[in-house]
Structure formats: C-alpha cells, structure tokens
Image (cartoon, rainbow, N blue to C red; front, side, top):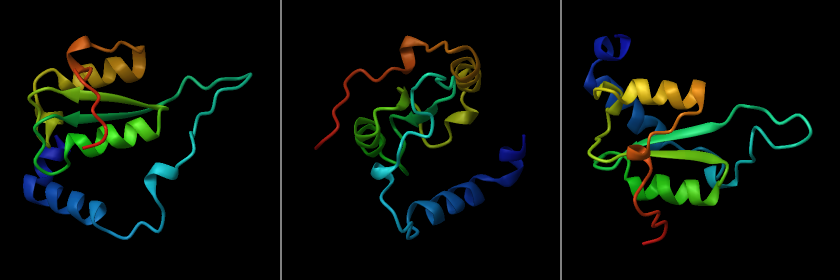
Length: 115
C-alpha cells in the first residue's frame, strides 16, 4: 500500500536517481554475499524483471545475472517497471523467497546476455 501512496512519479524519480548516479564501483564485480561452504546460507539474491520494462531493459539484468551467476533471475513475460502491482507477482516473489518455489512462467525463455 505504501508504494501506491508514494506515487508512480516519485517511484520512477527515485529509480532514475539511483540508476544514473555515480556508484564508485562496478556492480558486475560484486562478490557473492552468501558463498557456499560448510555452513551454506539458505539466503540468496533475486532479481525480478519485467520483460517489457521501458525504464530498466531486461537485457541489462540478463547480462548482470550472467556475470554474477549467484543471482537468481526471474522475468515477468508481459511485465513493465512496476511489476509488484501485477496480479500474482507478489505471491510468486514471496513463494520464491520463502519456499524456494519458482514458477516456470517466470523463467526467461532465452538467456541472451550480449547484444
């Protein structure tokens, strides 16, 4: 509900500020925050991306996930930038995070990573 109160303009504005800011590092160089070992963490990093997102291109997320293989990538086939408002997507996100259930409909059909 807070996302709806925040408004689409403010949500997109804050996304653009983060996306185009100077980060002082390359995100593709990030180490796995949950490395495997004797006491493997059940935690993981997930990216949920709308295939039809006009703000953040799916190709960018696919490329990042290809370089950082420890990220679990999910793609909403007809999703735009505000996929959390789409029916069923929040449930799918929670099931993936909490139960490890990944619906086949959110697996990308082709992982083309380089143009």
